[in-house]
Image (cartoon, rainbow, N blue to C red; front, side, top):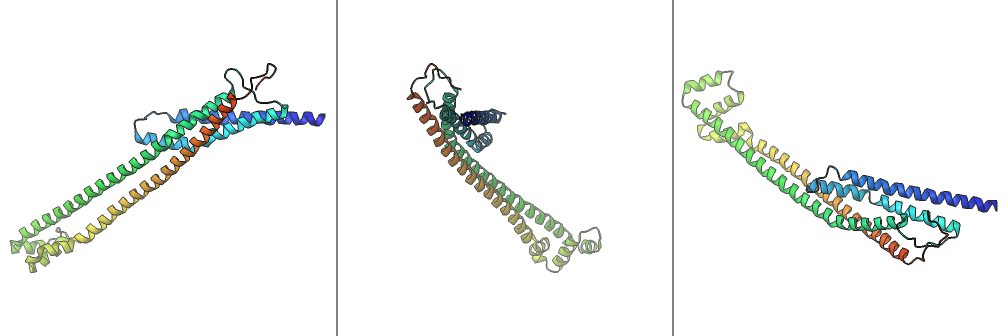
Length: 269
């Protein structure tokens, strides 16, 4: 008899513990849900992506809480040899099953919305980096051409006067690069453009700059691709969560509706 009482006490403790932990997990998720809504910027794509990602990552928490809560009721019924009955009005089991159904609908809507936002964000990121690359290439070409034109104009003006040439070659205020161009152009004035390009290392500078630009583009595209893969994974998890919650909620509500009415002397927790 004493052993039986101990089993009943232990079962009661286990049932109460399962219920408490289940309720805490569900309430913790609902609190996170409310906090993630603020600051509320539902019209922005970044907010939608962040909100969906955070909610999906936490999606299993209320599912575990629901399972623990229902397990607590099951342990209680087994320990007391009671049968599940349909109670009049609202009760905790009914509310949890309704919440599961609503979460199933939420995750079902989040799955395509999140994937669509991720794909749009990738397209926008690639379009933006392509535009930046095009602008950077144009700006680079313009800078090189402007520098070449400026040097060519200066050298051509100096070459018109031999005295200016000698003075420039001997002047320490003239950059060494300009003096080298001037010296070579003095000997081969018809090859001035080639001499300028050679001294400026225009091709090397251009290639290095373009390589850096292309490297940045590849990094952006790689990050965008990783975000797409992560987003698709989150979308699939959201779909699986929706299936799980819908099965739990709708099946539970249907089964509760088929339960016998509550007996007058039976008190639910």
